[in-house]
Length: 163
Image (cartoon, rainbow, N blue to C red):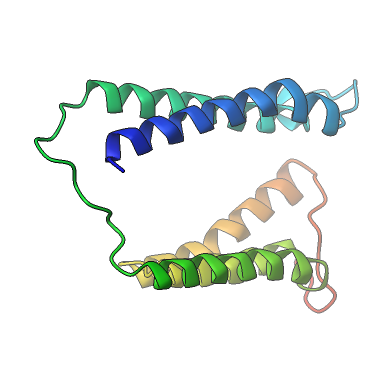
């Protein structure tokens, strides 16, 4: 399959997911109190923003695939070793399942750190030091913002509690 058709299919899928999230999933499954003083703190705000961005990215994929000139001959698949690709996919499913199962015990911040590192090394990052630094700093900074500035309770684990 040609890169152009893959991009068009991904773009259509992203737009369809965005429309579904904005029109069905968020209104029916995300509850929000009516008296939220700041719109940014509303539970509906960020899911809607992310859904809209997903739709924009899908439109961008379609637009760039249509505008890009056609290659003389279609390139073959980028994947050389299909069994290895399916193994990585299965390992990613294990990482996601483990994340959901471990989060109540370790807490959101620590689980996010471990999940970030596991995913970074699964995809064989070219920047392992940066991945490790980001795996520690991003969850901690987000915790500080949400717990101490926005006043949102972040799930803590059974073993180590953050201040």
